[in-house]
Length: 102
Image (cartoon, rainbow, N blue to C red; front, side):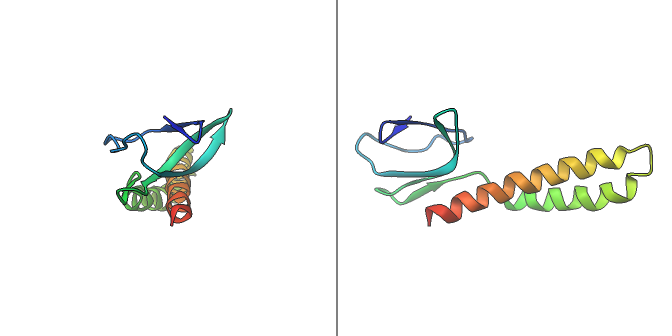
């Protein structure tokens, strides 16, 4: 899709309802001239679209807590802690994008 003539990539499980002429706001990071939107809001209809953040934050926290004590055990804890940190980072970025949309 394009917003103000700029390409926007928005990946989600549900298809956002956007019609021609709708005013749309998107927030995310720009990569290679394309906005990789993490959150989107259809200003015309008031609908917001973004992935869930609570479950990944809880899962990430649990994995970090489990992973840290397991690091001495053949380093398997590094996998758990690393994946948990990644999940926390992604969820935090989505929350920042949602906040930017207001």
